[in-house]
Image (tube, rainbow, N blue to C red; front, side, top):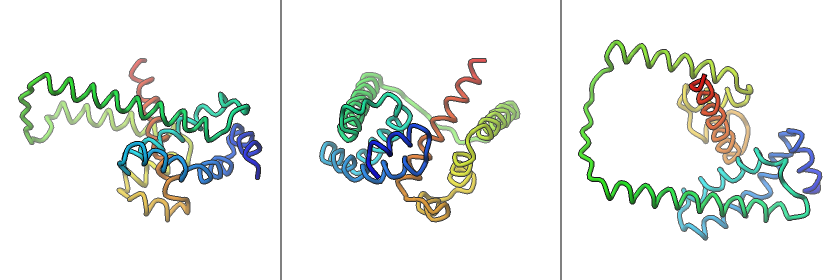
Length: 182
């Protein structure tokens, strides 16, 4: 299927079109990031974030430009943002000499209540997600499944699982953030 048609279908939330666009562009984007960073983990993380952002903002894609070029632009910007954050983090932590002690203790009864209340909020937020996102979060965090086992269980490519999990976590964080504002 032609890329333009895939994009049109993906804009209408066609999951198969998303999958084909992802599969057609993953290797190219990942290799680009790998050359830039020299680090497979960072290359994979930035590539996953790129697809997540691209699919979330697909309606803003201008078909006058190549889809790969658009992905690369998003990817470059995400990498620059990540490098800035890392530099800022390193600088702020090198300037402050923190003496941190970690104490391993059981939570107090009050802390236990807060944890349970937060867990109830999280479970309620998870239930508001699409079934596919609920399922992937369930498998990863409650059933403690690896990415590979989730990929096998759901019969989906490993990288698709990673992107969906990333999107599910981001959506969940947005829901919880909105709930905190209320």
